[in-house]
Image (cartoon, rainbow, N blue to C red):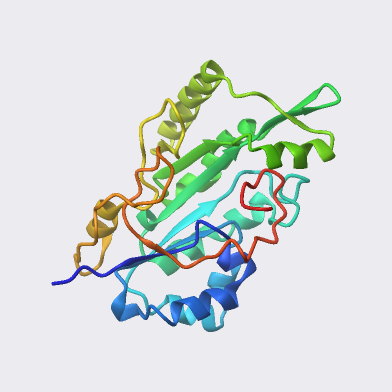
Length: 258
């Protein structure tokens, strides 16, 4: 039997939060009966839960897996159009109900941002314990983490606001990683690091996991995806997002914004 594809929506832009109509249009080409799993990435999941066409379409797919990004910076100048973290975490219970299994929701504490302005430092790292405490009771077992990548355009964008990214420091990151693992372990969660040098390769789209969780036991591709970053271990999928639809969240650290 031919393997059905995994559809990703989307690494490139937040289709749910910013372009739900484009998401619906893209899914018309990949009806539920022709899809193994639909993997959604969003910081603004509310449109998935509102009564309307998107929710009705999502309910037809046999398996929806959600990457939910909650960094604690929502509503700040770093994520000006992202909902505050407490509003998003209030939706985790209904999202688990929609997905039908808490193992189909992965929390992304992604990215960790460390910067300084006028001698004063900022880091969302300190919010991790509180967020972990709030999200763990819903049965969430996986947290994915990365640090802001110092792309030139990101540094320029932050500089316009007076911010300077702290330079990458392998020793500091190793210490933080240990703290993240310790705190997450307290709540029965595992931490995976997304395309980070010095850390084990992880899979945000994991064909083995999606096959194991599929309600009909269907297998999907476990072949490593082509065209991803060297440290990305994701398995093959088809992404239906476009960089020509840049997120309207306005995150200052985003590498996808021109």
